[in-house]
Amino acid sequence: MNLALSDKIALVTGASAGLGYACARVLAAEGARVVICSRDGERIEAAAGRIATETGVSAIPVVCDLTEGEAIGEMVKGIFDQFGRLDILVSNAGGPPAGDFANLTPQLWEDAYNLTFQSTLRLCQAALPIMEKQGGGVILVITSIAAKQPIAGLVTSNAMRAGLNGLIKSIADEYGPRGIRANTIAPGYTRTERLDELAEGIAEREGISKDIVLSRWTADIPLGRLGHPDEIGAAVAFLASQRAAYITGQHLAVDGGIIRGTTG
Ligand SMILES: NC(=O)c1ccc[n+]([C@@H]2O[C@H](COP(=O)([O-])OP(=O)(O)OC[C@H]3O[C@@H](n4cnc5c(N)ncnc54)[C@H](OP(=O)(O)O)[C@@H]3O)[C@@H](O)[C@H]2O)c1
Image (tube, rainbow, N blue to C red; front, top):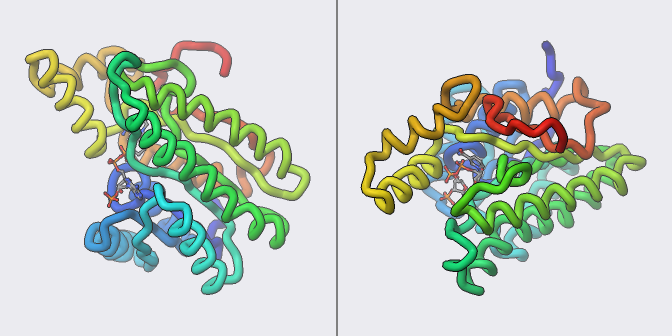
């Protein structure tokens, strides 16, 4: 399937590693001009180098901490100044602080809001006027299966991701008539640094090995394995393309079937 993404300008945030990196790499492999950002200059430059080596398409690295509103505004303005447009926004960052409700302090809630909800809100606020002016665009937000089915011990994620579903559904509704599509992608258990850290944390708390935690998760997945980051990238590339021109306001789980619900 030709996704016809060449010449599209894409911004993928939180892209020095994990799912963000995979999304950027797949978009670049499909021919998009990709701007990638993360907090760490060395890591994001190394990621841009790997994308160029693996796809033959250069990526533009930007240092941006997504918890800082001004930095987000400057980054998006920089893209507009350089390219005069922004066709695809993939909003992604690290995961919010883990914890049960009883253990979560006001500060942890604030951190979760800033990193997971407000970063997406600000990215949309910066990108939408550009997309509206150019007559179209695509917004994709990496959330989690926690948005569809709360996960024990990830209470901030459960709350923020469900909120993001509401935000993106509202944007899809309001901006659809202006040619802008907006969807979320809800990954299941996908092998990245973050997943390894979560497994290590649980293993330490329960006094078991990390492999046991990983095999517990795997046992619950109908497809019998963890996801690969490129599988999230492939869903993003499809949804970003004209092949998905009639898909908006949706929350797509890419999860090996772990969510059993028949709605939502
Ligand atoms: N992996 C999974 O199984 C899974 C499942 C469901 C949902 N998710 C969600 O998907 C998202 C990505 O997960 P992942 O597994 O790819 O995480 P990851 O491996 O920890 O990667 C996170 C990326 O975000 C960047 N980042 C973190 N904080 C940032 C900030 N304040 N500003 C800018 N960049 C920032 C990191 O780069 P720097 O350190 O260089 O800044 C890194 O590139 C998370 O929200 C996670 O909760 C993941």
